[in-house]
Length: 177
Image (tube, one colour):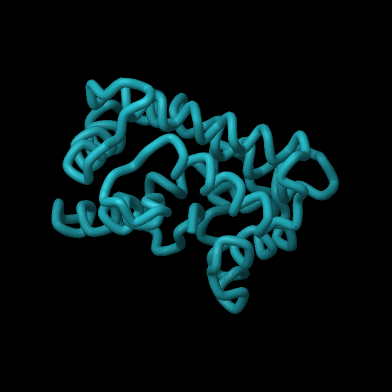
């Protein structure tokens, strides 16, 4: 994985989360992203599941802003975002990455875990991919790639590893859309 590919993927993420197109990430962008995700899963934006997603995305914004030296009411430039997320993904280690992004992944699991068993099966995963705009035709192949222990269920740990693998270039499915 070259730095250029990693930066391209992070720039794409920045653009996706910059919902108002201001060229900066504000808390409101993260809150709107959470609402869009909840709606994509067919959830009422006032539901507990949607609130959990909003809280997780607000926590992610707080982490990014603090790491960039920006106040909670401030905004992140693309340069701030690339620096902070690059450090998180490539330098801080898996434990820190999981601590920061774990709540986001757990909250999304809560949206699509229809049987509330705490893991995602192939059908739930296909619904997830559909909700974030990934073609359903690729769901079965992607599931196999993400299900590293081949038990037919995806844990939050496997999903976090998949997000990291995407940024390292080892996986080509964007679980966060």
